[in-house]
Amino acid sequence: MKSRSIAELVEQDNVRAYVLYYFGIRFYEYSEHTLEQVCREKGLSVDSVLKELEQPGIHFTESELPLMSYPLDLIIEYLKHAHFIFVKHKLPYIGRLVESFKANHQQYDHVEKDLKILFPLFLEDFIHHIYEEEDTLFKYINLLEKAAHGKANPARLYYMMEKSALQQCAVEHEAHDDEMAGIRKITKDYHLTADAPLHVKVIYTELMRFEKSLITHARVENEILFPKAMALENQVKKKFFERSKFN
Image (tube, rainbow, N blue to C red; front, side, top):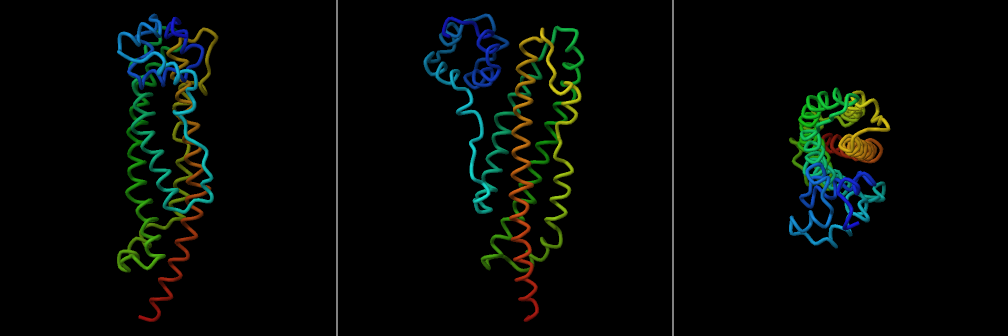
């Protein structure tokens, strides 16, 4: 592998472009260089880079966890960690791929133009959604957990319960789950022609991987977080209103 070109290595497995990116190697800038040449130029250990390239899925994907058995605070930490990976790693990488995208291919010229317009809008909307979720939904669930242990301010708890009905949040959340519909439309469901350029293959691979992560993320929220949180909310409401009868 040391003597093979970066283009060859990425052509064989598109996920390698992501690994190379985090070693400071942009595959489209060094496509004709061999791995050995690039590592020498960047002052990198060839063996370290090779190790990651030979098993690109191990350190760069989410691990499977038995989340159903986790308490709510750990599920929220898992989701926050996923948000961090999205915002600090995956999306900046895809954004850079889109910025540097030069299709030079009649079939993909319109994809290049449309993605350069749509992806920054998608990114802005997605990041806003994540921060809003952390600032409202997650904080409310944390407050419910405190209330279940008798550690919440009753006035604040009442205000938040009136403002943040979890059932309504869950319905609205599910309605906005398909955030990548526009990107799928532009790429025709990530359809690749036989002569698709390497840059197109890498972008489509990363968009598909990101969408798969989003589907997993949404499933954790819709099938685990919301049901557990709604059960907790009902329990807290019952305690709260029973207590208020005696005051």
